[in-house]
Image: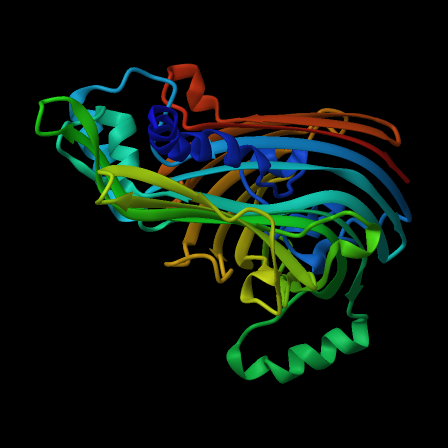
Length: 428
């Protein structure tokens, strides 16, 4: 029985440590250096920010290999946490719980004219642990204190993302018609582009949720023992024995990009429209923690490998992303960028679906064509932190090498995460 009690105590902590490493998403070295996938960022990097701007540079051929990775959380940081800081962090945990994530992307992009083909290993996910357990990590265990797991949930997907993007810039006659139509608003645009991306997704996902109240106290003899109420931890995932068992789905991105004049540009996009992964069946791994009053001890009931058909957990819904951004050319070769992103996590596993509001400001200097420099700052409401990013490129003729790193506040021992990326491209 002692072993079962130990499992009961450490299981939530194992979930906390192991699950974040499997959540994924995608960025490029250029956008990491700027701090975000800006809706006004042109080139193949716009695949993640605005499908209308993918062919903005007008290159006839692009071949790109990329790899990026990130880990972040909303509470813990690489610094000594004072008692005063702990109170602030506990207040964050009370609102949102402890949220952790890890992002990764690697793959290939091939652009020929206005059409871009891509095949990448991607994903998306979010792990959340209740505020009570976040407080336990920050302040340590309190005897006779009951810690609730309610509200602990998460979902992560791992999949191959293949598809294509098409971006179209209006010709002069079409642009003139648009300007005539909006003339009453005293607004004219110098160029206008529209874009659409289609994604075919196939892979797997995992979901988890936990509930119950647990703690440590004293029994009648004064011996430390477990206290609390019944609870459970459950996992849901497809059983992938054959290729046919893979979860599959589709997604669409749409966007619009406009140059107002020679100095100002605007972009708007909606990503992951109708995006989901679906499988015919999922397996349920479940541990129920039940207190047996007659024996005065906890029992673990394992319902592993149950197959569930036509169940709501057979579908993993990817987050919906909406972006709005602007760009200003300060002087030749120096651009200032601003962006606002709303990310809505929509999967049914979330008891309270999280929403992230992300505000980004950045500068890109490419006066020296062979050595572009980038930096940016970003605030995320979900991460509850301000991140500083920087990156650069080495462009030797058609061969482009770009790399970036964030969060540079880690230099001052205040960072809650790390992000890095590398892109190798051939551009004509």
